[in-house]
Image (tube, rainbow, N blue to C red; front, side):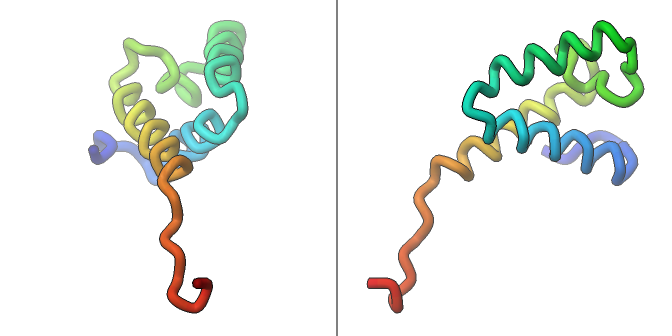
Length: 82
């Protein structure tokens, strides 16, 4: 899924947060804390994609799941490593 028309900076921010949440040992808690921070700071322009009703939230979720799959997928063993 391609991000709806967003700046490269915003796309990079979404991908970075998705990667962080996917790699964190307790990603659900990290995501909950980020959502709480969004509520407290009201910085929807920067972090709004974390909210389920935001138009970029599906892109964020897709990036997070993609990163989780990448982490779980075993790396192929090179012929020289065998």
